[in-house]
Length: 498
Image (cartoon, rainbow, N blue to C red):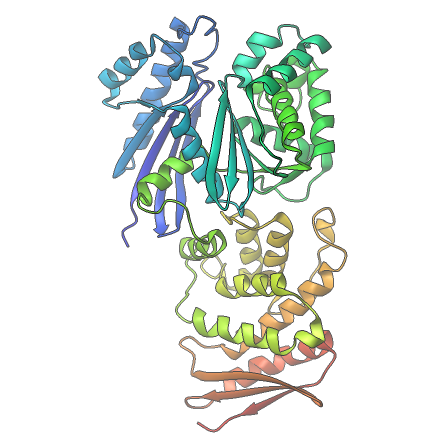
């Protein structure tokens, strides 16, 4: 499969953003470059028309991002416009100037097209099946209802961060009356039919708010994608921001100074949407419109991924040089060992899924440094483009790779994320994975059969290979005591005749 490169330019109400991606597999891409320019096309757009200053900023931004995009010689360069251009009677002035100076044609998306792209970017990077997506931009708020991983309905309201600030929040800080007016407008523009408690937030404002919450709670993970903010915490953060002046918000390290004068408007809008949707929490998505447009280029016939987790694992493996040639045998052995010892460890199907995900990434980190490969594998999972997993599952998966070969898992730095019993859970899964990795010590492996059998006197591992298995037996022997300790039963290894 060719590693096709696609560049996407989003000419939004607040920012002009570039995303350059390269296909890794049929279900995964890697980001090659990003660029952002705070053009604020929607600023001062009270009569609908773009201002002269906005057009000038937008043109400069398009020159910059186009130059960066073309340096990658993409097979497709997609440029779109959203709310600011949709509502501007004079939008052709910018569109024609951009085409004249760069050769790029900006296509203004309809509200439905914008919602579809945002939906694709979100659903292809999360495990969302049924729920709602709120996408807050500079010009509009999009609310999408998802049922069975399909976009059921979408609504758009001209209440993005720029427009909401200019129209409703004239004071600095805003008065209680102004805040109530914005909340009322959200309720008037958005009609939530039936409540779906799963709510995912998309857009730069959502990510900025997630960074603020991360710093306030001393959250142990750096990744924003998949972070969950409770209703209570989000409301407290909104109240705090609305009570501050723009200058006070600029002094908060986790808030981009370019957003300080309008981030409170985005927070108020989202807070009201959470109340309307009956959402107990907001899950943060790091992917949205631009990624959705990339998927439409890379998978035009079937843009929705059927299995986000598997696609993400395969992409992470491919992007980090993981040898997957023997993955099938390792996965089969890990499944057999987990199932054979289920009565001893009492773990569930979700735990087995984490074990198999780790087995697929066996060897991650090797291409960085063989001697510290386990630590590098842990980092790659923590920071890599891993989608469809909760933050707790990311911690468990990374710990599995870190501790599969040796040692006792330490989850103490992640107390805010993991459950009370997760230390034992990871210890068991790491011991199981360690034995399977030991059994498939060589590549290609001479092992042809791995059969775990639980008997009254302990766990029997029956091995059959083509040729001698001395290296595999030694490797298993090094893992044997740890497996016996977590399962609390003797482990015996026997060779079957060839």
